[in-house]
Amino acid sequence: MSATVSAAESRVAVATQRQLIWWRFRKHKVAMASAFVIAFFYLIALFADTIAYTDPFDTQATRSYIPPQPIHWFTANGQFRPHVFALKGKRDMRTFKLSYAPDPGEPRDLVLFARGYPYNLFGLIPTDIHLLGVSDGQPQNSLFLLGTDQLGRDVFSRLALATRTSLTIGLVGVALSLILGVLLGGMSGLYGGWIDVTIQRLIEILRSIPTIPLWMGLAAAVPSSWSPQQVYFAITLIISLIGWTELARVVRGRFLALREEDFITAAELAGASRMRIIFKHMVPSFLSHIIAAVSLALPAMIISETTLSFLGLGLRPPAISWGVLLQDAQNLQTLSLAPWLLVVAIPVIIVILAFNFLGDGLRDAADPYG
Image (tube, rainbow, N blue to C red; front, side, top):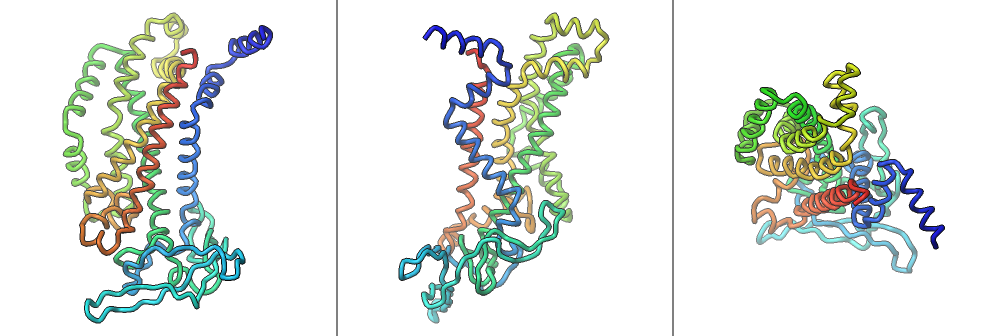
């Protein structure tokens, strides 16, 4: 027993900080599961066009508010054959409401890697292969896994592309906030003097302004004539310019504690520049804390974009994001006709919870000796 303990202790003694963090993080089962969930969603974002089986911008009035279509896995004789039934529309002559009912006499077999609308994989490779399709007929006329919206657009396909937009805005926004937070917070803590005073006053001004009115004011300044790509870039910048202040405060506090350490003095005597001291010597010493802070900032960025777009001040159609899709579920009349439009809220909740659990695990693992 003593030999086993001695071997374990010696292994810990020679382990790097990265190894210690990984060993402790592996013990956090919820955080590990959350990491897989987040990786799954980013995989969806990466292959969004492949997962979408119909053109998310394809509209047709006759497909308006079609309810979600169940998948039948077995035939009547017990044979495994995933399929859906064709839908037949019937209009109520009293209310003029069009309702849809499955026709068991017209099954549509589901196939993998079917051909559909053309797109560029990763924006580079032209292809028309999609993960799912039907063997007989066009998917836009026979496959509605999550139903359709008012304009007859497939909710499942639009949700796949919305996932890519909302998650990439979170990544880009956090990346910009990280750069600003580390750079300005590091300069504030390392230089001191009037630079520290100026940066801290700027942080206090930004943090004293109510967040939602500030978002609304900045987002409303985006011209309505801008393209979706320009609005996307502007919203990312807006969210980043607001989100860097908390990280800057943390970095400043750490730098104030580190700048009197011997290795910082040695770097200064060796002629290292201030920028080199910040990024080569001081930041790596508490990199684990920055990783934890970033993992907790990502859900805040995603919620910011979703909130702005839901209020009509962020991304606007024809752009597709979680907030844009949730705009369709704003009023009770729409929800009474198509309650399945609220399905967009499910991935938002799952991703936000997963990021928070992941952040908790990283924060606990960041102190491997604790």
